[in-house]
Structure formats: C-alpha cells, structure tokens
Length: 208
Image (cartoon, rainbow, N blue to C red; front, side):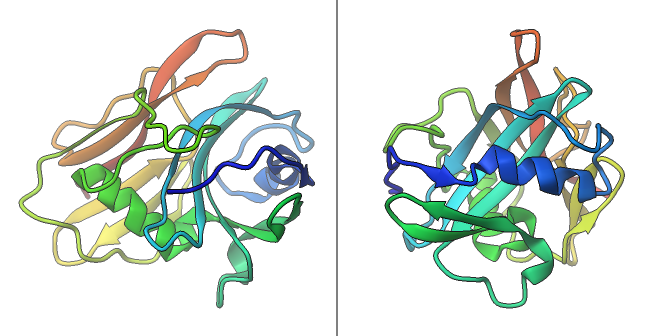
C-alpha cells in the first residue's frame, strides 16, 4: 500500500509535464501549455518501492493520459524515458519516468486489467478509485509485452505469440470506449476544461 504524503514537490508534476509533453510525438497542443491536472488513478507496487500513477492533464486544445512512475534512484537503461527529477518534501529526490517504459507500471497495468490489482485514488491512502472500471475476457494472464512504440495518439505494446496489442491512448477522447473484439480494457473519469466530468478509454487489450 502506497502512503500519500501531504508535502511539497519541487518542481511539481504538472510543471515537469509542461516541459516534457511538447517533446512527445502524440502531443499536438501549444509549445508552452498551461496544464491542469484533471484526473487519473494510482496503482500500488507490490514491492512498495515505486510510485505508479496514471495522470490526466488538460490544456485548452486537448486532454492527455500520462502514465508515470516515481523512483528514489534512476532506473537503469531508461534515461530516454526520464520526464524529470523532483525534490519531495519527505522522500527527497525522486526520478519521474514515462511509465510505459517502466516494467513495474506495465506489470501493474496488466494486473489491473486481469483483476489481480485494484485502482487507487490519486490523493488518498488505501482508498480504491470507484470511477475506474476494468474487464478481461482472456483465457489466461498476459505473460509478456514487447517494447513500447509511440504512434500518433497512443502508445502500443505487442503481446508476443497472441496477435494482441496493448494500447494506451495518450490523446483522450471524451466518451471513448474499447474497440469491438477487445479482450481487456480500463476506463476512467476526468474533468474537461469546461468543468464537465466525462469518461474515456485508458487502456485496451485488442486484436492487432
């Protein structure tokens, strides 16, 4: 169980993302976005070492899903996926990574889809997020994923020897749902810039 600390982060997560998002191939907003944290959820790391968060941020032109991990030391071989570093008021230096390149996050996401893990509220300790929905109709657990590939609007992982792909839409569409034939999915809620609360597809395990 992750413990949520009421403390400071310097810079903030949103400040880190405002510099990082414009460097992503799936981002189509302004070069200097004014981001707002609009939703998301957390997952618990079974080892208790890595923070895992699926954050939704918005700006006037769109909404984006950003899976993040937070570590107390650099992740070997993941320098290309570093979003930035922060100083946590309790935990000290934290390295923030694009979670699609962190095996702890991808394992947690598969566990969530398959029903072996439960989504947690972003800002409360030991509190399930009841707005997150998941389902899985596969014959067994997914035992491996290929390397993440960024496309124009999503990040995708091939599932070896299955003909399936795990897709995370990075640009969110209000009201989006899994494609027909999807064997697994996660949906969640977030707040649009006009204050309207909506739901979107956050991840789908589907035929290639």
